[in-house]
Image (cartoon, rainbow over all chains, first blue to last red; front, side):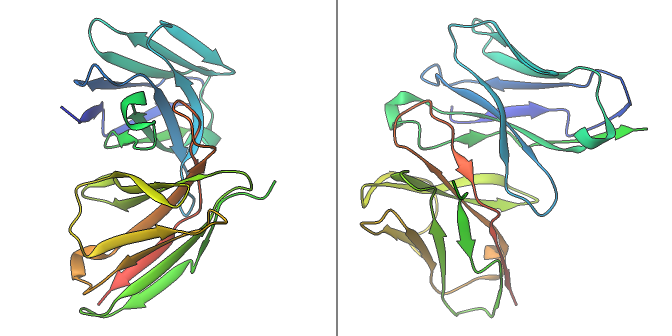
Length: 114
Length: 113
């Protein structure tokens, strides 16, 4: 019940394409869903986060869609660029543990071809 | 503000040894969490400290321990190292409330031979 399942494991798109990464969770106590981006040799960096009372959130070229009833959320990257090539992680946490424990998906390795 | 810093960045140890890793959070942040990242298991939560107290704990054996000091700096210790402990150990800090962003450091790469 603590798991967050992420797919696909890897993704290759052409520049300008719209990669979509999907995540699903079981624990209905989760109430915070961040996405992190990680480049080789670096720690993860927050991209965008959403809470269950919102169905969609956009920040620049990044959009999260959230389906509370299906317990699923996804990341869309509009007009993808080679510089977006990185590993993306979805995560979830809950106020029941003060949000300090992030449960991560397995990660998606994105490659954007020029 | 300076980001989360971790020392050392790289470490090589042999089986049976112990290791201590250090994390300095962003100034003003009182919560420090530790994660282990491996290719097979991904990012797994180890523990979280807040105001010098362990607030959350993951499913790791007792060989993994941590502490937090009054200035919020944190250390984690792994005793009796095993080959499977080879990983990137990441520290993250936040102010302390739920739904706040956790800011990650660059990690300490530990290799156990």
